[in-house]
Amino acid sequence: MHWSAIIFNGSGEFAVLAKPDGQHLPSGEIGPRTVIANECIAAVGLDRANFSPGQPFHLLDVYGRGGRGFTLYFSGQIVGDDDAAKQFAKRVVFLPQSALGSFVPPEVEDALKHVPHPPS
Image (tube, rainbow, N blue to C red):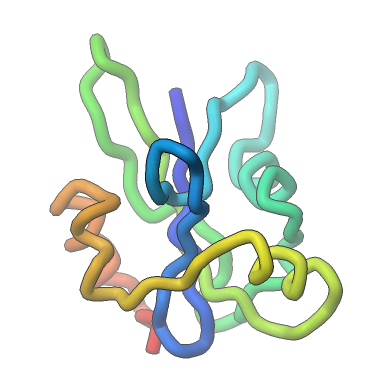
């Protein structure tokens, strides 16, 4: 299994990492006996305090098929300007929410529309 994080800023843009093979959502593999959400947050160098109470880091959707694996999609809105948030912002590029469809399946994009407190 894998995880991917859709991390929004206060402007409603989402973070992607620039890698040699293109831009990607922050993501990784899920290890055994881990608390997945905490592993995701730690992997990007943040903690739960870096996320808005109105849009906390949470499981948004699970996508995939058994034989080809699953991806757990998490979402949240980063807030604050502490060192962790500043370091995160230096490592990513923020793209407009209209580009999200290039990074996630339509079902995940649709799930974002049903979040009680959608990003602004």
